[in-house]
Image (cartoon, rainbow, N blue to C red; front, side, top):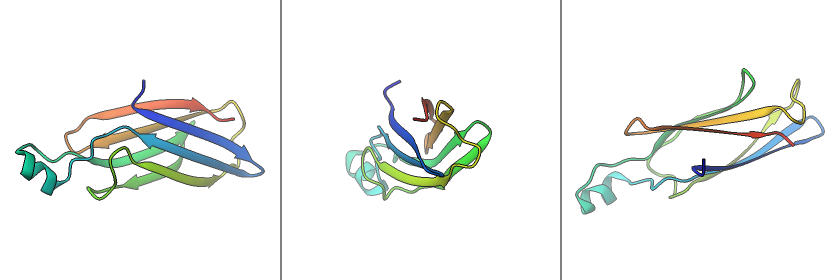
Length: 102
């Protein structure tokens, strides 16, 4: 735990979410200057149950510890359901955390 901060709230028929991933987000240029390998988040997926509510492919151009906000139709989602968020970085590391929908 501690690799992500997740907030998920229902409002009317909308699921409103905000997440912050803790990651260095080392770009190719910064990595070259430091003499290390570039490493940044390349894929993020959020699910409630078996339903994918957000999926995105990202690049090196997100900031360190990126914050994402998104909304989804809440059909079939209720308070207390578990939202699971997974990110994968360029090195292959995968982090998954979950939070109950409020």
